[in-house]
Length: 186
Image 1 (cartoon, rainbow, N blue to C red):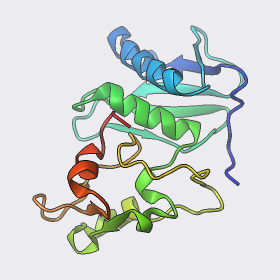
Image 2 (image 1 turned 90 degrees about the vertical axis):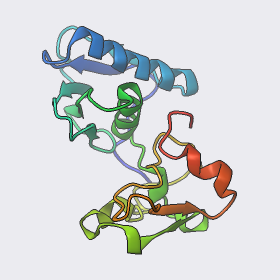
Image 3 (image 1 turned 180 degrees about the vertical axis):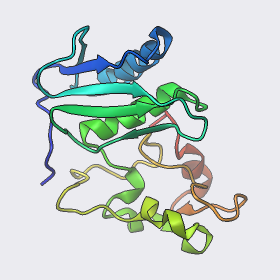
Image 4 (image 1 turned 120 degrees about the vertical axis):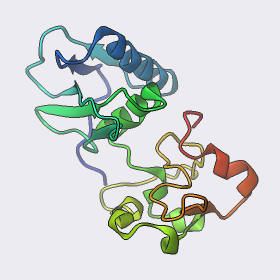
């Protein structure tokens, strides 16, 4: 059973580092609105750093970096690092916030081989861990169907040696499912 859970019966406290500009905070708020629209999760932004567990957003301004977060609740603060320099900064904020809430990548589910074929021969070996199936004692799909369009799914060309060839292929309905990968439509 997964550990490091948040208590979703009350809003999750949020705090921003001083280096996150107002317009960047608005992007994170848009991400929160997207999550709130589809879940029972609520967020509460705090002007003063909360004493207990909270999600802490900080900016790392680097064009080679999009975002980073631990998976699940980390006490006392859950850092979510964002660059705000990628193609879809709101989508990145949703993705990294979902990690902080406990969600792992869709393509790392323990049943993923029923849905996708990983093209190991086209993956740069230093990125093999991007495709390692998650420990089923820590992560469960809760009986939910595989979601090719999940925002938690990497795109089909992640870590490719030959960027014209995919590193993952859907086993079913490739023409429909593959274009969804890595999108905000999930």
